[in-house]
Structures are given as structure tokens and as C-alpha cells.
Amino acid sequence: PNLAGQFVRRGLVDEYQLVIHPVVLGAGTPFWPASDTPLRLRLVETRPFASGAELRSYVPS
Image (cartoon, rainbow, N blue to C red; front, top):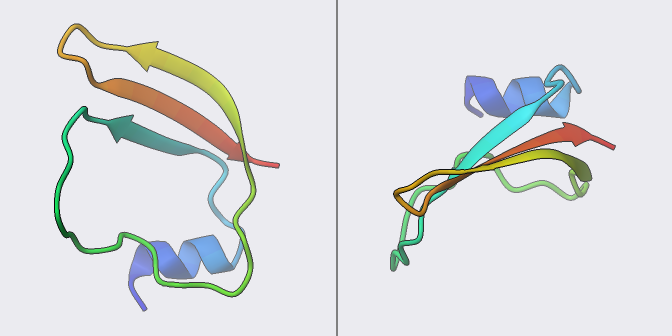
């Protein structure tokens, strides 16, 4: 498992910031490993950019 996945599994991440780009890709590498336990998040901020990208900030709920 990668370092990010280890932090997530131990509940050590207090905020997730995802930048969403308006592009569809056919494949990619997952950032987090698969898990049997859902990671429930609450949206706390959304910030759009002129490029069409959007920053979304989440905290564990």
C-alpha cells in the first residue's frame, strides 16, 4: 500500500482537496487502494476556476 492509503486507513487525514477537470479519460491509476469500508465525506467548500476546473474540499463525516 502507498503512503496516502496508509494515512487514510488509519483515519489520519482531516481534509481532502480534489481538483475536478472537465475531461474524460479512458483509464488511470487509482490514488487510493480498494477498501471494503466506504469513506464517507462531507463537502465543505467548492471553488470554481475560469478554466472550468473546480476545487472541492471534503472532511470525513
